[in-house]
Image (cartoon, rainbow, N blue to C red; front, side, top):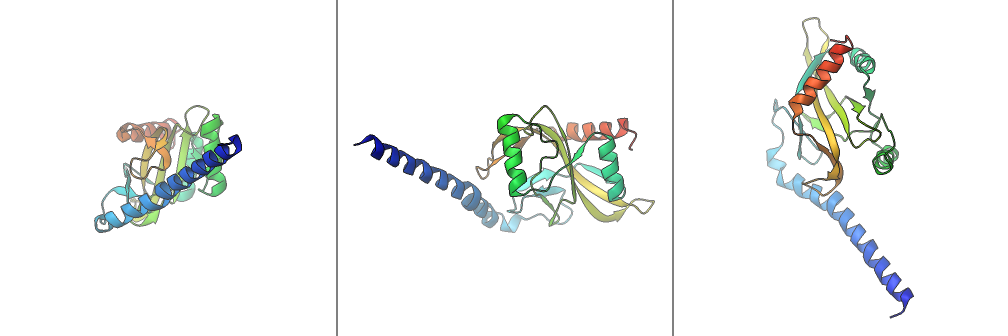
Length: 197
């Protein structure tokens, strides 16, 4: 067998393997979870977010009262950045940040649903030079209001401790630290120290 023929065969196998992985992780596995969990979707008032495929995500662990403008201002003063929207360009950007240890303080967060709606706001605070470790929180505006008539926002605060493969789908994703109460407390301390509570 010639060297050229061997290279061509190896390239063909590599391309086939990559295509198979992408099809399995990003098409077949999410569809499996969608079909499997169709009858187990979030019930109203269940305090857990879900992926668009119905896979359980982060629990709701924080609530704040204020206008959207007040929340954005409070997090900016506390040193948190507003997360970019998730697009192909920002997905490539976060990948480069993780692979090449480059800063991306506005890196996007994945889309999670609470009561059928995607997050309204997302903030993050990087740890180190890369987007692989960061504090972040997603917020959903509710119909409820505080005593002063300003809206109640429910949030899911968590700490991304690194990047790896999803246990459910095999997709590349962040893994969150298990102590979400500590992350909620960190967020509240940050806002309080900035005089924003």
